[in-house]
Length: 299
Image 1 (tube, rainbow, N blue to C red):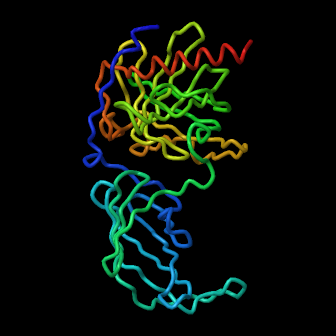
Image 2: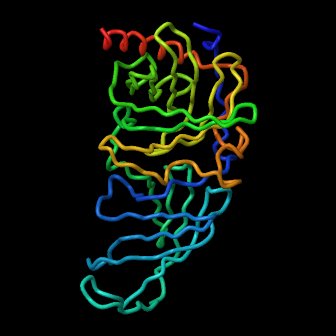
Image 3: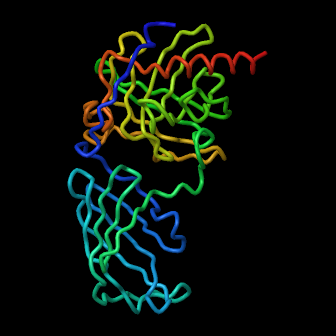
């Protein structure tokens, strides 16, 4: 095994890093029946809340405004609309009927937030995982990992289809047999809460290492780690094909200037900064477990 297997240290700087929360359906997993649809475009948030009146009838709200504090905050009034179009009726414009107070969101990460509602109620919400399930099988599908090295942009494609047993610090490895690649959520040790990935060959030569926070169909706070020097660069991953074969072409990273992940510095791209010149020791066990399992699979 190369000098790829050294030590990596995390510096937890989540509160200082700018990010964009995940677009999609959010809610409190213990409070089924109500929730929030959050969309964000160019720093503007549009939130739809589906809830109920105290007497029982359903009540929908619309709130919009700027994303604040580097992606960590949002606050707006919960506006109510009435006399709009019924589900089977010709179009009729709804009219605004005041609001029920303000909603304030503090995004702790891209997928977790605390919510303050009218009347002083506070709750925790998260991006719903209703289609992928827990890791390692939650990684199944095709991914593209994009990173920049020395001014050149690279894209690695992986297709995770099987799982092998967990390492001593992880929850089980999602594997791409053909590319000798594997990813595992770390549940203990210094990298707990992050996913680590490696690829290489059956002889033990590692080619790439990645550390990131999992976000259902994308990665957050990711870095690519050099297998030879331990240097690191910002990376971004996108699930482009789901396990069922559904293709999400919109997930292919754009080349549109500032929005491109490679236009960001490593510090800006990841809240969990990786010290240059060091590699996680967890990579060694992950790679060894992966090689052993894939050798058996090919026999």
